[in-house]
Image (cartoon, rainbow, N blue to C red; front, side):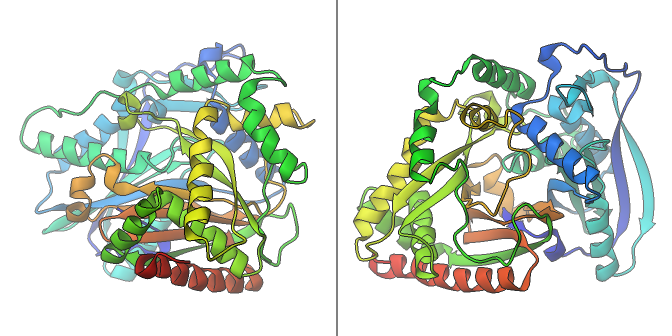
Amino acid sequence: MLQLPVEDMEMTPGYAVEWTVSAAGTAGLSEDSDPGDLASYNQKDHFSVAQALRAADVGYASYIGGSFEIRGSIDRGALEAALLHLVRRHEVLRCVFREAADGPALEVVPPQDVKLERVDVGRIGSAAEAGAYVQQFLQGTDTLRGPWIVMGAMIREESTSVYFACDHLLTDGVSTPVAIHDIATAYAAYAQGREPDLPETGSFLAHGAAERRRGAAMGPEDALLDHWKRFVARNDGQIFPSFPLDLGIEPGVAYRAVNEADTLLPAGRLDAMEARCRSVGGRTSGGVLAALGVSLKREGGPDVHRALVPVSTRGRGPHAHSMGWFVNTLPVEFPVADESDFAGIMAGAQGALDATRPYADAPFVRVFDLLTSDQTGPRIWPFAVSFFSYLDFRRTPGAHSHLAWKAHKYVSTTHSNGIFFWFHRNHTGLHLNSVFVDTPQARRTKAALIGTLTHTLDNIARSGRF
């Protein structure tokens, strides 16, 4: 699977069909909704950001989507059944949200009440028109009002492209390969006249409720805050680590976002880099983080690299096959001053990642409340924040078929106030998807950094040095 800007999607024209989710007989939401029907910490924060930007007349939208190919002539009934199966299988896709005092509040629609509404758009004549149409269609989610998921297909005689988008309110990055695996597997089953056989899923709502209970039980002296307190003390009292290079922006301003993709290392060179990292007790994720810290220093950054890192809270049980937002955020820091000390910097980077594990149960939104006087959650981040995400798609559901399915993932956001890096590994190598503010300085800064980073990673692979 490759994570790309949706603008880079290649779409062969065909006959376009759209599906949206409807719920028969849904009841209105009560003002005194049961706490079990409250959104997760991440959902509440994302909803608040959308509200704040909407109030400021910023047309903010953010979704995570995917696409894949089905070879041969399509069985439209089987495809529609597979899409309906996806929504009925994952409760987060059956949620209806509304604004509430401690919002958003939500209602989960029972599986049997979920329907799909189909629209036959018709034939699209050119690749340019098909690409523009699909890009526009995937932008159809709305955090505050819904729909929260849209699905579609471009049908041709020899193949069909299936694509979907979920508002970020619903899903994280791993949810995309989960969805592609589920749709493709269910389609194959229905096309053969049998029921799908898929792994058990866990409840995202129960996961969020357990997280809220843990957060509510935390106090200012809780041991789960120790990692954060040490980080904040060394970060000039700030809970957010700032991105250290010039992006040409004003703090707190939402800019239009640019989305770009770069291939950093091909598979063979990445294998060599991984071997160099393991030779000094590290892993690929630590090596990429170390290379980023060193590259930022070479571009004018500090001697200590600090960043926020999304950490999966899925575990290895049923949640591994669930759709939802199973992510916490934790800080890392390590020295990068001595660029000649490959083993030392690697140990620092890997140790920083490993040190987050005992604190994964401390929800970031709750940590923010306890360590600041705000008490409203972080809402919009106050300045450009240093951010590092790494994901190995080879370890996600359906990975063995990603190349055959031509599976792609899309992270789309209309606005940003900084720069975000999503590093990801697949069967073809190491790739980077970056979303950043659309300013001339940010474009220059990002281009220079990627050049330095690519050179640094290549050096590791070739010689075991930065």
